[in-house]
Length: 115
Length: 113
Image 1 (cartoon, rainbow over the protein chains, first blue to last red):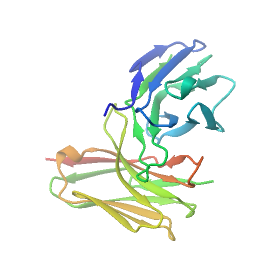
Image 2 (image 1 turned 180 degrees about the horizontal axis):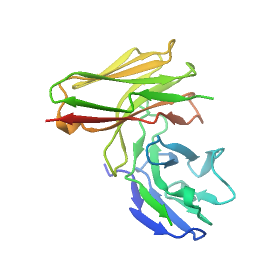
Image 3 (image 1 turned 45 degrees about the vertical axis):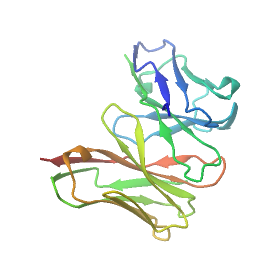
């Protein structure tokens, strides 16, 4: 089966600019996550969707970050305006609800550099 | 608040050696625990998942154990190979619904030929 697709692979922007990331989860996976991974650290959850509804966005900096998952499939994560500290890898993951294995499947991520 | 730590931060071993990676978590009320592998510039790949009711899981040369009461999990890698070189992360999940995974910072493993 196809994996989690993310684009772009790399992005370099200047501070105060805006940027958007795209994720297409594995077909049939109702739960979708966006994680931020700063170099040398483990991934930190930004937002979790169940179908097209938000389950947890408690760690999303809502003054600059936004995310949506229209039709419960693809998702986009946007940063506007970007700050230097937003430089990180943004990972999308999906999980099949009701799967007793409950494993998370990750995309390759988008590496963002804010100059 | 759940916190996950991993020791050591980095490990270098000669090929063929058996090794153990450690993961500790502060809140023992977990639903399950997963071990992941991350290659440079790549996403995470799930290796093993242990439900809270289980003590261990095995896949090939990998064995993961879980001791909820002490807040610890170990990943045992037998007969290490250079291809095992990667960062290994553990993640704990608290509840069945609406609870996300909390990740440790990872252990960077280098297996020398």
